[in-house]
Length: 431
Image (tube, rainbow, N blue to C red; front, top):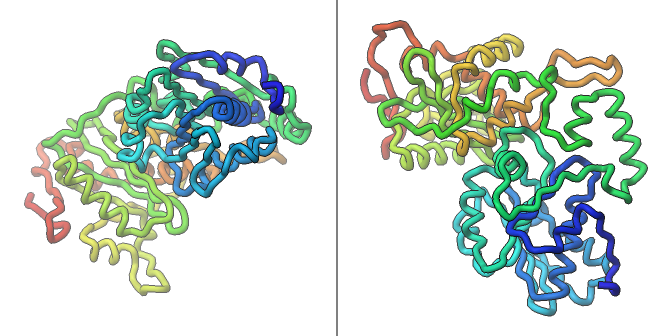
């Protein structure tokens, strides 16, 4: 150990001892990832160790921690011992670092055996479904699961699983900027500035607390923990979908059913980036086949009618050619749509596994902060949370479409009209 260039803070010393789970969470500038990378490189240098480095979504190797590990190897003077390849890192003693995304590599993850340590980075976005797949896969005697994350929402599966109700044999530690003796002065200026301009956001970003800015967040007060549970997909109810269609950014889809006179059940959420419309229609076909669903309304924003310059077709026409008929959400002012969502949410239930990503985005959808005025603007921040929030807004403002066929209409309404996917595409099946 003395030959290595080694720096370790007190809170990470227990990582040197055996535990099934080793969890470090907190705010920006704490050195969590840097410390874990150093610990793993050291262990792989000292003895043959197989390490899986995972995160919820890894579209390419550039999304992984391979560069962080490579930098750590160089900083510790171990370039001669490790070979950093394009998609893996190999040690002369047989140590090996793998990299994978959890969400899109279920089969691959299940195939990993003989893993000594899995490091899940940016784990705040990992869903219950991914954890339920990963944990039993890491089953070698003495194997460990290391977790690092910045908390986003108290509803997040990772925060619930490891902070609020930690499993047995777990070392869980909160680390912040104040625990990092090498905290850089550049970040100190940013920290102090945010502390004086936006104390609520400061608590989240720098002190590592779940986002709790109830003044700035539009919907956080309208969904409580009791509304997030296991929500079955009822065979006797049609399934509706509400979409936010991205062009160069993400497309988001809420899947929901309506039960009784007021209850709306969100049974799934899907989001992807950089895919064409055909990808999402294929996902919808596969979802229907998996769950044996009968579809009701598919709701899209009003700009789906806009014609694209390249094809001369609107996305509405493209979707129709792919076998899906969209209903168009009304064009309402943003503020009116937000209020409609607030009216809808108290009657909503969310499946804790399938909807976790969308729910996290929804609860963190917030107003933009004006540094100059020291006040919130009247518009939301456009960021990763916007897509789930916009799809939910289109759902809420279109209740006149799905309410009458899903149970929210007046008593005595006509039986449900539904659409079902067939081999030939989307067809109507009666009234």
